[in-house]
Image (tube, rainbow, N blue to C red; front, side):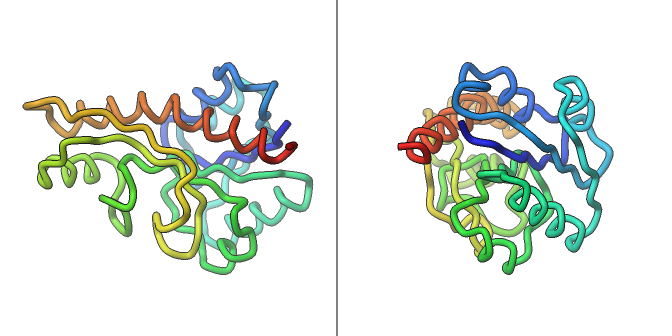
Length: 188
């Protein structure tokens, strides 16, 4: 079973979905949560009795990630985590840090591409498909190897906010599936 640390910046929806996943406690467990601000993810971590750390600057974030791996963490999962990790952390933990991204990478990724900005870009590009990507983190923003993607047709006339809701539902499935896959590879 994988031991995870999860980093979040918002409401904690992806974090909650991991706890409530059918794979939780069989393929993976969450030992630590890291946030960069007071946010809903703190309450989710508390609800599930998980240690939560607040790190508000890049140095504290890097130190926390070092500590997670030093204490037996297998992977760090960035689930709606807004800070960009420094290149040295990404290189030090190559293929050990995983990110969720609300597009079908490599499209609509990179600096500044988060939240509804991604879905606005998808709609402006008139993409036929939208979805999410689970990928390894490297020093290039949203440039790491893709582990898993879920796609679906873009409904005609949909707005960015509603499309984002559909993408979030895809992430709710994709992230636990990717972690289950990695747990099988990790132990296999």
